[in-house]
Length: 266
Figure: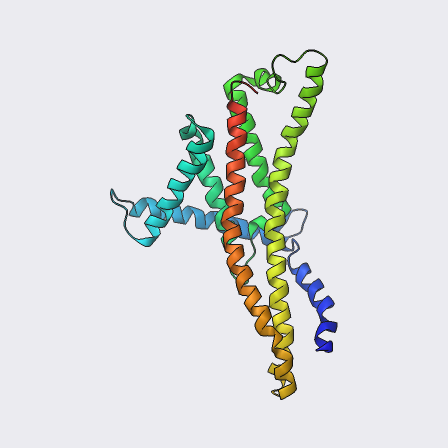
């Protein structure tokens, strides 16, 4: 068992290295990384899901696939768009639904062995956060006018020079929104996959001597693998829930920012 633990630090380092943004084509300066590759795969899967859903959709939805997608659409409609944005939810619903499903599909793809979540790289989550940022700032400018929106960041009724101070704080807070969106999604997905990989690695290391030579001692050494695999399965289930929760959190925060941007008073 001591030999197993001696191999663990090196194995963990190799595991972490596997989750780095390795280039699939080109290089890191101008190329396709493994995360951007799986991000593109998720985009294709999303388009296929929606195409098949629209083709199979009938007046009375039937079938597990159609009902499943219908449930997601209803959930985003009622709990996110209507529940947060309010009366103007229809104009924002396509963006919010696309955002939720795209992130969720990325997260689920990352749970498949041998694949990586597009949301597991900070560059990819930053791109998603930037899309949200541009969208709600654009909607705010559309509602209040360009100068009106930026002026409205300072609450009405605050006297000079305090209103300038508050405005600077609000602008800083506005800039922080996409940063927190990107970091929250990245950290949750990256950390979850590292934890799952660690327990899978532990199970493999403890089982390796038994696979090489079937002896009573090696069988005893392999017993902890049962515990590691049990924990791994539990974490896997938790990560499936996290995949949904993180897509929901990202989308609902975006909806909150849209509602704030379009609000008559800030």
